[in-house]
Length: 227
Figure 1: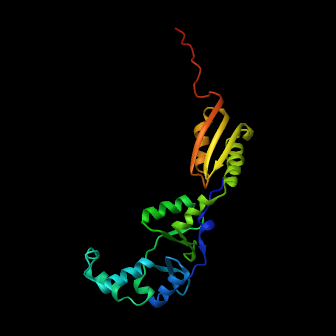
Figure 2 (figure 1 turned 90 degrees about the vertical axis):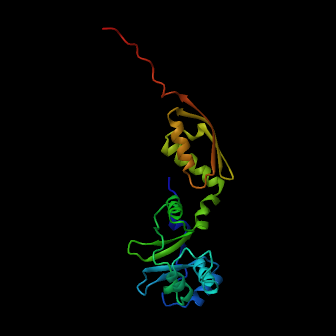
């Protein structure tokens, strides 16, 4: 089974700026592009940082009300630097969260959660920017057509992974919810089948009424003979 990877859902070749780009230009890119983040690249094409819309909003807040109770948890020096920033390089986050293009969507989601971020920069092995992936992009896996999910379950999970005859199991998918009825060959296959179906991209939930032909879990009792 092939899972969606970051490269499948990311925005490739996103709009980007340099550290010297004026913040007014950065704001224009964010507004016109209807995006939430702009990568900042060095002249060599490597990631130097990132400016998010929240950074510009924070700058506006600090300019107007540097002593706001919502900002007092930050040292004065940081508030001053943010308030007086004029270029992308002066405002950017220098240590943005990154992810390789080959990472799975699930791995990217875990990284976002760990970094408490709604976006990740996608970089290559050379450190150069390949794209940007957002939380909204990761949700695209749930837009897979029901027919595609059903085909993958029958072909890849039942036939290839479990080695069972897919004709013996009826698969129904409605709005991403999978219903399974029929019989597997052995009882021990049930947990593996459910795990594999739940792991299929786009599956919201699984309802199982699967049975089995052979109970290979309950071993026959062997009589104990005396010595």
